[in-house]
Amino acid sequence: MVYLDNAATSFPKPQQVGAAVARFIHEIGANPGRSGHKLSMEAAESVYACRKAVASYFHAPGAECVSFTLNATYAINFALKGVLAERSGSAHVVTSNLEHNAVMRPLYTLKRPYTAAVVDLADDACTLRNFEASLRPDTSLVACTHASNLCGRVLPIAEIGALCHKRGIPFLVDASQSAGMLPIDMQAAHIDFLCMPGHKSLYGPMGTGILIAAHGETLATLIEGGTGSNSVDFAQPDLMPDRFESGTLNAPGIVGLHAGIRFVRARGQESYVKEMRLARMLYDGLHRIPGIRLYTPRPWGNGYVPVVSFNIASRSSVEVTSRLDKMGFALRGGLHCAPAAHIAFGTIDQGMVRASIGAFNTPEHITALLAAVKKLAEEKDT
Image 1 (spheres, rainbow, N blue to C red):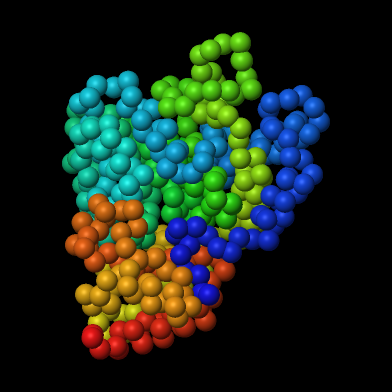
Image 2 (cartoon, rainbow, N blue to C red; image 1 turned 90 degrees about the vertical axis):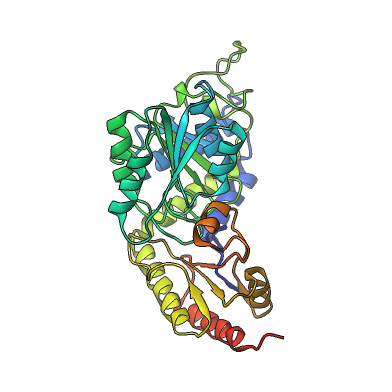
């Protein structure tokens, strides 16, 4: 099976990730921060080592700003609802027209007014102007993706962050498709809340996510419970990261995530350059096949992540990916939990076929996929 669904989760994982998880389970195994014995202390030190690595990699103000969550969706909900919980019902939010439901569904649930700024697929300056035009006197938060999970377009978050900083508006970034892929300097980009999964381009296990909150102590909480700290007090602790880490952490997953981060750091930008080369190879090959619909300009470095979405004429994207699955290719069809983006592209009924490239894909994988797509495109409708 040729795996090209890395935007959903990266696969395969580096060997050292599985080894780190297995070592924790078999040699440490204790609950971090819940006991004073040697194994618990070693577990806590392992978790803290990952916390420090995350803070360093994303240029957070400090390791205490890093909270581990179940996934990026949990991190987004913690930050978005934490900011808006104590603000009036008229508090306005600015987001983009390419957002995942991890942002859109919390906004819908909160019934807060929002404006979706249009992302220009070729011009960052135009995107920035659209964000600026969307701001209002009552805007309480700007929350947007860094890179679209549907089309791969990268948003100019440093410029959007500077705009928010100038206006005194908190800035939340969903880095689900960019963390580990693109360099992110949280402080330079004026990001107040950086949310991400551990299992995509950071190559950690599923069940790991991260919220980096520069001022997390100011957020209202969604979950309260045992933190292993200040246990005599019924109130949830204000100190970070305990404020958002109630209950037992996924310590084996966090240790695996640390191994994934080391893998990513060792490869540097070489991996992104290689994956974008494969994305352009795929895009160019699809462009030459009659009947293929492409929805973006040719992806270029720093403007896109290695995600290429397409359709075969008016054929159902789910039917196409099902056929490709039988031919030995794992891609994703449908709406990708991003109906807002499909509305923007006019594909809400058809969906799109998405190929997302990872560290272990090769030119041979792309060549084989293009041959399979060409075969499907040449079939006569029955």
